[in-house]
Structure formats: C-alpha cells, structure tokens
Image (cartoon, rainbow, N blue to C red; front, side):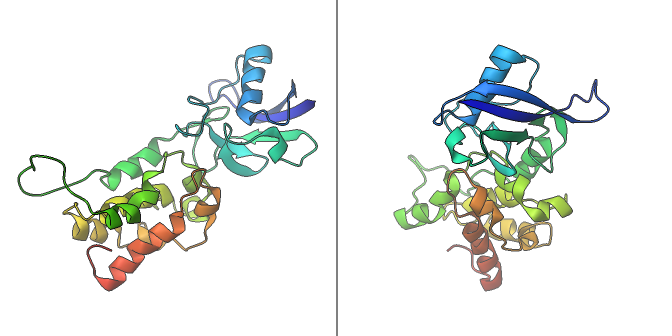
Length: 236
C-alpha cells in the first residue's frame, strides 16, 4: 500500500524556518516506521537526517514524534496508526533541533550525569562482588530497563515549562541508586533531589509512564523517592 509521510525538515545552516516535506512510500502493514524512513533516505532523499542504530528498541536513538505521539520509530508499525496511511513525523519536543529529526540531547545527558549515575561505596573493595539481596534488586529492577531514549523527558509537561527540572529520566536513574542497598550516598542523593527542580517538580501526571517504550512504571519509581524523603528513610 502507499503511505504518505509529512516529515519535519529544518537545517539551521540553510533554512530560516522549518517546513514539512511530503514523501510517498510503498509499505506493508507490518513495516516499522523506521523502515519507511530508511526507504525515504535510501531511495528518495539522502539529505533527510534522523538518528537510528539497532532498530530493535534497545539503543533508544530513534525517538521522535509520530502522529503527535512520542515513540521509537523502530517499535511502531504502520498498522499501529489508524490515519488512512498518512503520517506526520516530527522531532522530539523540548530539545533544540540540530537538523530535521535530530535534536540536541546534550542538556538531557547533562541532567543524567548530574544525579551521579553510578554506585558509590565506602570501605575497602570486597574480594568478589558487592552483594545485593534479591528483594532489593527486584525493587530497583524496573529502572534498569531505561535506555535513555529521552521519550519521557520530551513528553513531560513540567519539562516544557521549567527547563531546570531534572526530568523523569534523570530522576528514574537517581531512584535506581537512591534505593540500591549497596550505595552509601543515599542521604546526600536525597538531599540533592529535595527541591522543585528535583523530585518535587514531578506532579504525578503519568505521561512519562504512558510513553515509556520499555514499559517502566516511571511515575511509581519517582514516587518512591518522595516517600523516602517524607519518611526520612534511607532504603526501601
């Protein structure tokens, strides 16, 4: 069948304003949206710019807006959209457009690094691994599925009105270490998040959970940080 794609185009080096360029692609219902974009670039317009890598929902690089919804182009199929085979493809909101569907994710990763996304321990290193009981591992396990695609942060309405807000992805990574029984910076981590640009910026609107391509209960995980701050407890 024939599908029409209206794709956002903008090159800051050459364009004064953005535009939408239309392409007609022959596709099957089970084809991925990424497959269609690849056909456009390979067969019609090699100047079209977008990110993609694994094409299997693992790397998270091809997050974009498809018919008004943030999603991974490699996870969404043509048949998933009831739009008479018409598609509008746009870059992630919130972030600056570098070219076409490619956005500047440096602010996103700066916030991710700000929460110190690594285990901090005290004392001498053990001869083997640092032990973590299964209950604690299962508690933080949902956060381990995050692929840093930025879909949740781009969708979050708080991010749109407060650029300083850490955003759900960074807070989710903070949850992973705040609640890890092996980490020794729990109190310091919680104190750093105890503000309106941190965890209290989250208004529990659930958009991050709804859009997550890995099915992570982001809102619930962020709620655990709030619970710990209210309790003054170190670990769940």
